[in-house]
Structures are given as C-alpha cells and as structure tokens.
Length: 140
View 1: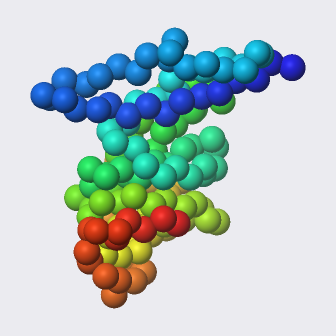
View 2: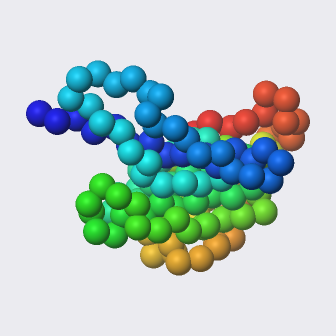
C-alpha cells in the first residue's frame, strides 16, 4: 500500500518575498510521499467540508476554501470565503455551516457549500468573548 502525505503550505513573507518550502529536506518513512496540496497565506486551523473542500483559517483576517473539484487529490482552486476578520484562526464545518473563531467572536456562514465563489459576510453567534490577542486565538 502506498501512503501519501499532502502538505498545505504557507507563504512566509520576508521582505515581501515568499519563501518556497523545500520538501526534499523532509524525511518520510518508506512508502510515503509528500507534495504541496495548496498554498494559502498564513494557514492555521483546517476543517474538511463536503465535496473534499478544505476550509482554512488564517491569521491575516481571511478564511479560505481549498477546492478539489476533480476529486483527484490535488487542489484546483483557492478562494476567499471571508475577509476583514479579527484573526480567524479557528474553523469548523458542521451540517453544511462553516463556524469561524476570531479573537473576539464566534461566527458562522450558513450553507457554505453553495457560497464558495466569493466573500461572504459571517453571522455573529457570540461576540461577548475577551478581545485580547495574547492567548486569544479561538480553536474550534
């Protein structure tokens, strides 16, 4: 049985130049391989949605949907589904809705599966959370 490990890579900005990930430096067990699945800016938590869509929270105020339309194990597109958020680190997918954990609130995008083509405005679930960045990331 051949094992495959996929990597979701972050573009690390240094002097406004992205650094490439050198996968050749990684040591994998015999029978495993690795490849870059998609590139998103500063990914944090991920959640698997319907149709092999991977939702990715980012420290840069955005939430991404990584789409695999062909079901071939390779990302076909990366779209932004939410932006202008307060460090949307945490994401969770449940019964067709995408939940987002920001520093100061929990929100959701209902019916996210039909809203993958552009930026959506999340609905606030709870905005009575502490708003301090220090230890303030919300993991869902």
